[in-house]
Length: 142
Length: 71
Image (tube, rainbow over all chains, first blue to last red; front, side):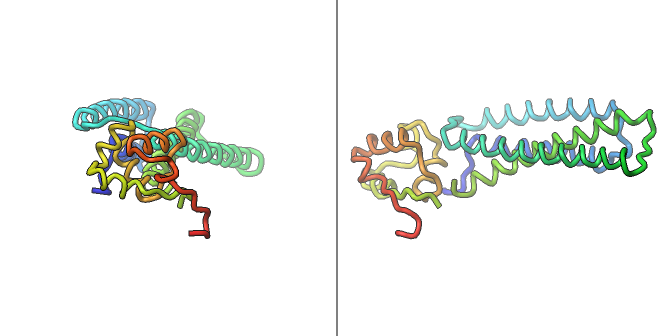
């Protein structure tokens, strides 16, 4: 069957599902976030990734990766880097605008958490871009 | 679409070889063999030689360069 998934594809779909399930609630409920929740979320990501990737490895008979997998992996990292760099420039620009032109009013007690969330969000979005690019590359001609 | 066309499907069928068998002998995944057969992926030169070797033909019989717009 031409639409069967390779070990790497299954692994990518699992990663994307975990990222969306864990990061989604975190960013949609950002007004109730705390340092403890960030730590719990990172812990949940690590545990879920280990469990799901182990299950996929156990139930995949063929765990070969080849030159096409490596090429697709590189494409994903390139797209992820581009997303991260763009978001960083955008974030720095917004920070400059708010401090130099606007009137930024953030409670100093939550300043650290605010910036942690913003930069963590950039990393998460870049990682999702990387994973989605890899998934799409598997379905398109290279 | 890559500019490299191939006859792998026909050559493989003539030898009664499955995609998985070909993939195992070259060290590729079956999905990569499928992508090559469907002209969705141009393999490296090393892989192209391995495919031709396994199928017992010259590389020219297996792969052809077809520039875009000249098919």
